[in-house]
Length: 186
Image (cartoon, rainbow, N blue to C red; front, side, top):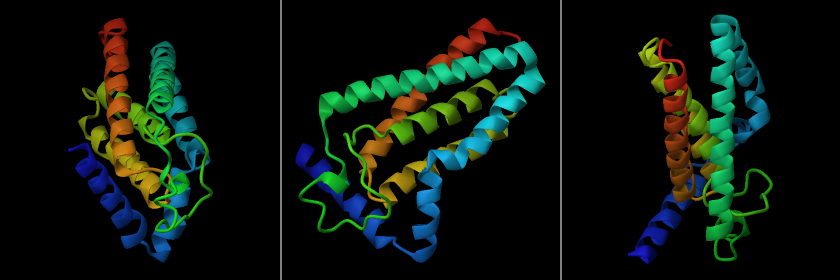
């Protein structure tokens, strides 16, 4: 069973990384997965929350940062326990990978990009659900596009980003619950 799941994971990786290759994605996906590309968005989120909600907005940002931090910490523990090589570092995969960014060091499972961005997306979606139900759609699509980019550029297998997305989502819901308990009128 595990071998079949690994084969499926490798097949899906090859489909995304190699089979979907095109000039537009070759340009876009490295930009999407680059955390520096999202600094203006992070600044806007912080500014919006603090400007619109004052003290509560500061608490919101602190809990959002705690969700991302807890997700990162947990993900690193998992990475060092599982020790799955990145596709670009795997001897059996290097001959079939189309590398679009330099290969990172470290392990692949779970994807920190996926877990961190899903933590942000799900936390914001959960916290603002009563005020803006529509917010779930763009935040989840944003996080999912970063996950797709991680596979497309050759740094993660689909299972890595799926597990990262799940980890980030669980942590986000936990910290959103804490935020709502501390701020029941929000």
